[in-house]
Amino acid sequence: MIKKIIFMSVAICCTHFLLAQTPQLLKVRKHFENNQHAIINEFVSFLSIPNIASDSPNIRKNAEFIMSAMSNRGIQNVQLLFPTTTKAVPAVYGEVIIPGATQTIIFYAHYDGQPVIPAQWAKGLSPFTPVLMSESMEKGGSIINFPTTQAYDLQNRIYARGASDDKAGVMAILNAYDALMKTGLKPTVNIKFFFEGEEEAGSDHLHEIFQNYSSLLKSDLWIICDGPVHQSGFKQVVFGVRGDAHVDITVYGSKRPLHSGHYGNWAPSPPMMLVKLLASMKDENGKVTIKGFYDDVIPLTAAEKKALALVPLVDVQMKKELGFPEQEMKGISLAEAISLPSLNINGIQSGGVGKNASNVITTSATAVLDLRLVAGNDYQRQQQKVIAHIKAQGYYVIDREPTEEERSKYSKIAKVTLSSGYNAQKTQMDLPIAQKVIAAVQSTTSEQVVLIPTAGGSLPLYVFEKYLNAKTISVPIANHDNNQHAENENIRLLNFRNGIETFAALMMMK
Ligand SMILES: [Zn+2]
Image (cartoon, rainbow, N blue to C red; front, side, top):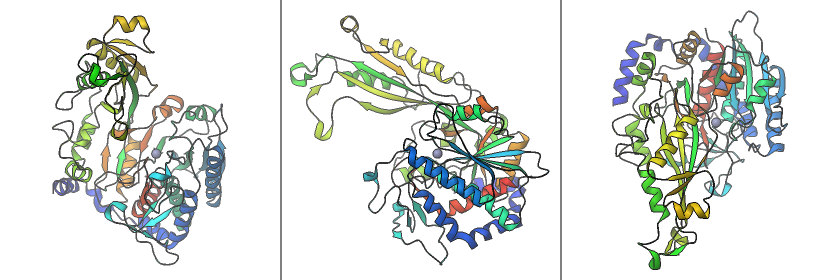
């Protein structure tokens, strides 16, 4: 209901909603309908090639598959772009120069995927043997045959690693270009294609590729296709991502594990110390209590505040879908919550539980904290605030195992190790080119396009700015319940087709 009211109010203020289903869009849609079997067969072949970044031979096969898909479509200057220090994870590049075009857009997706644990996948599913399901497994979908002549039901889903994250991106971008070529539609911008091969492994060599090919990669904008559309099902345009950094904390008790009957009440309990320390970092309302945690945040602009206010409220829907009644940070929406820096406990470890449980006082307890950052935060400064908080709780902080002397001197010792990390990245949504992107995406749908100043997730988009001085805007296409990074990853065919239409519109943006 709430969603409906917001939708109406947006529809009233944005008259260009009426322009949806332009003749261009209908041509692209028809092209998909007429070629759906070939398009999906090619996608399935692509998904059948294992794509874990550390698996160099298969990564190269993926890259070669993309190169021939590009050459088949008449894309020019197709080549692998190599980092300086390795040949293992090339990016795939191609371009189309349009006579008279004054702007150049680079379309980005990544072809590697998260590591897989096949045993965790549901019965009948296997990460690199794509199958078609009638609908999502959670909604009772079952495995069906890929149709050979009959039209696809666009509610069907393909299950495979990379189906949504992010081979759908690669294929949607290439098929969008193909649709323009085959239907006589003309791109309005020079198009460059850039498909990365180690995004899920941390993009460690991306900056080397950028340094080696900086003139080839000149552009007015990068459009990043990665991640899901809004939980409401509406398309979304995302102007920034949060940064990310980690803090690992270990606290110590006795040097050897102790019988909890013989020593309980007397020996210090590391897991108890750790949970108290962690609990001191947040209040009852989910607000981080670490001194200065929110201090560096650059306030949202008027345009960003307006966009946030128009984000459809999915909180009720998502809480029901996910099975909990109340959000951690009270009184604010999901969209507002992810516009703030966050502190999450990724994991806690001390003794065993379940079959491994024993009556023991453990020697140490460890937690991994995940810090998400927004514009204004510096990841190292944010990590230092956590350390200052740990010290303020009476801990002696070191970055290695404690010595005998330290153990006998300090009752509260914390080993704190810091990961490398990166800062948030944001493109201003009122830039002329940003407005063109919004209008192009809006031209493909009669529904609201959700504008997100900063997405909850993190991507190292700062690399694009630092090494290429480039702007980035994300236009994701996958269904929100795609299980990316987990077992049973999937893409709904409607999202894939809509993605093709979205990229085709962006290639023709005015
Ligand atoms: Zn991804």
